[in-house]
Image 1 (cartoon, one colour):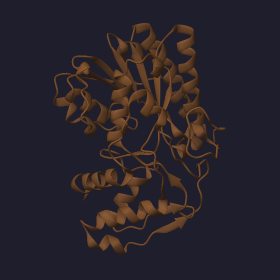
Image 2 (image 1 turned 60 degrees about the vertical axis):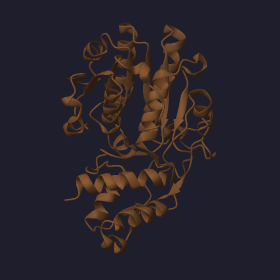
Image 3 (image 1 turned 135 degrees about the vertical axis):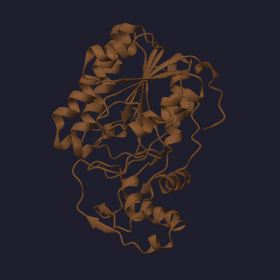
Length: 333
């Protein structure tokens, strides 16, 4: 984490929805380290209890097991909170294609519940996880916040609707929000298992087991892979920014560099081979392109630099080294 003084978060009461998930649990730990009083709301549908092992030992941590689809649960969680970090969602484009109804119930209905509950509780600001999927079929690179295309999946629609609701809540109720459009976040605690596992932890686990990972398509699709510590930094900046112009905006949350899937696999093999030389010989396979996938993704981070003073510390390769080391030390069977 960068050497920025976030002392103003000491003793602040902060609710993290989806706090047992990959990003949420990392946020909980960081906020507790900064002296905040943290409440985690999670229904453990995708979040994991083991992600909270460290936080549960802290007297300033409160766990509420509940679902954001229940308005009363959201209202209870928002009571006396200063801020809300809304990370709870059903991620994954393929999941939303297979089950658009549940994705909509959680990502749209649950988000609206949180907005209403936070507004009614007098929360100062709600920071929410938006998504780079909102750029949809726009082919322009880099992605600039004010220029989006048509969504390519039910998941992308839900995330765009969140931005529309947030905008309306400012105009109608004068309730402040900031949306962070995450670009392919990776790092410690990201779940490598399950049908909808993200590509980096999934490939890492396959390489460690000497299994051939399957790349969808020819491997030349590219992503702005973003290390978890850059995402934590963006959330902290969004929590503490005092510039009125910076509020009620959406920001790309990324490093601002794109990597093809073929290059990603090359780096993974290189870094993992330092622990197990045999991994260098594991073959990579290629499959069909996946429905709803955006071919290329690259963020402009100029808006975040200007309005939030964002200066990401970890490049994709630097973050990947950290992540590989964590997976090797924590998940190698």
